[in-house]
Length: 124
Image (cartoon, rainbow, N blue to C red; front, side):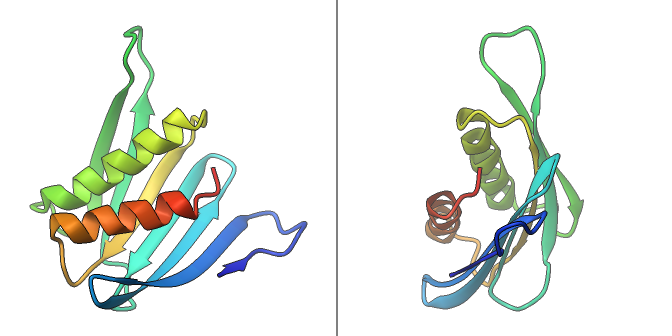
């Protein structure tokens, strides 16, 4: 795992893990107003999603996830983004999330492993 040097303006973590038999590269960056998470098994950006917490008067938070580029018919990718933005919110951050997923396998087990890997190495 590599992290950004002290004083570098963007907090960054890079790591490589085996997810369901596929080498998966992760890059996690913390910018001033959002987090960027890239998880790729192919070396490209794949599907790009944006997730954010909706501000409102309700007691329970509401989250919105939208697909910016890529596969719009993959509910597991949306579920991944939703779980991560929920974790970001529960950690006390109001930043949004930009998530790039390029996975060979979109099964529930693969998505759970990706979410777990990101949460274990989070920077929020």
